[in-house]
Length: 419
Image (cartoon, rainbow, N blue to C red; front, side, top):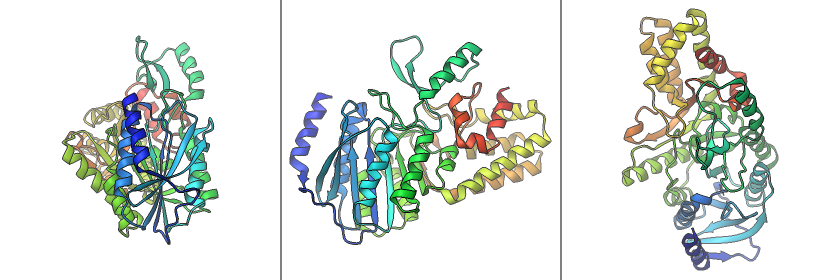
């Protein structure tokens, strides 16, 4: 870690320029992009790599690119930069508060409100992620090693259940910080994105929200943020430590005229090209059009209602779990599975029921329309861009708090399967 910090210090001395209070001033930019990097500790080397790539990739005046980075989890300060051709321009140092959601909102105000407005706005969240569940900082088994963990997917005793419910008052979601043990949970994410829409972008949605993190490409996550961004980018499984190929992405954004759809498709294309070159086999990355995600959710409810009306609980449990076993397993998130594949396998289980087969085919087509671009390594070929939470034995208490669980029939389906 100390060697990395020394290298980073030398990098700062050689490549960062102080603008003496002068803001980035690209004339009529097409894009304003904020890359928000926070709470990195063991990701320090990856942050250095991605920051360097972004600087090297900046080619022209088509985009203003802003970066807020906290250099390590123990500091209370973050550093703000903007990109110029071949340069990383230092803007200012800011003191961070204890609420990560507020820090993100303040950073968005700096990037989108205090600089020349652009036609489009994109926000990239860079750090750890845990999908729709909010994990806790806890021991791994009986060892003294601690990590971010969700509840075990097994039956729990009532006394343990009550204890867990108390612990879940402090659950973690995105921006997992191993040192400070701070986080931004799902509810805070929604509140922050709502604030950015109303008070920073004057009622406009973000044009894309990218999560350079693990496990965020889920129906539940996409549905809960559909009112705040047009497009959403994320991985279904563990994101590889290299992160996004920022040199190519920033080069394209800063030198080429791209609308939001073309931009998210370009990001997936560059991601795919980069990881194919590295020889990686287990990656996923997808871009979703969130204007279509409500239809996906409504069709899911229609499918589940048909199952409830047509089959008994035991039959539903049996076919659901047979289908589930043939779906992909995503690294540290074995309770997440690919929704398209689950529908496909469920259709095979109920092969003689033409009505459910038709509904499932319609839903698969809707997913294909919502996922405007995706890529996978050869070990993840069954991943089609959208995951859903589907445990085998136990529903995590944090899931009950999500908007999706309270507004869809999926939670009832899980309760029936796990009863």
